[in-house]
Image (cartoon, rainbow, N blue to C red; front, side):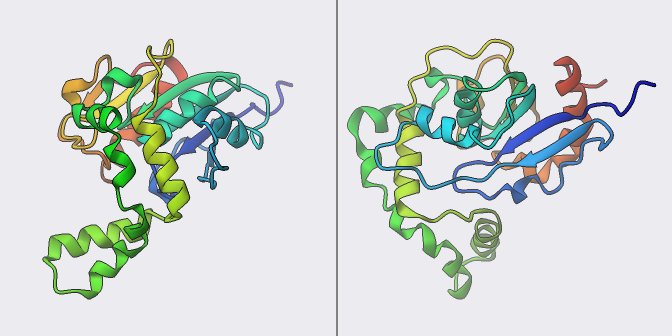
Length: 227
């Protein structure tokens, strides 16, 4: 008589310029969770991160949901949570407020040097495969080509400015933060109140997916890792 159990709606946002295929190995029990991959869209001219988040939310039904974001996607889902009824907010390889940004990003904000990053070259990352560079560089280029799909210069300029100039002063209540102790983008020494993954890097959503498949269901249900 109970009818079909309502599935928990889970929305996943990839990192800066990444396509949602970074979540391709994340498997949650299908009888309990309904996973939706989110994509980056091109920002409007002078659009704020909050305004951008509101536009992303337009396609999400107004019902309780789980938001999971990686890296800059983790920052974005915190802004999205201001417009949605969120039952669980989870960030991975990301930051919860501006004080967790590394010193070099804080300096870039203060000096404005981030405005000189040649984002127009982003579309040529894949071309490294054609040149006589070390195998490690070629492997890295193939990963970039596989998982990074947004090379639009306006988007990249906007995204870099928004992460470096993000002004959130305090972490959202009950946020769950998962972070690797070998993350070179957001070093763990600046991170507080996180579940720290030994040997986890900035791309651990890709190469440590088994950990996430084991623990995400329990984290979503209870806020704690499975034993």
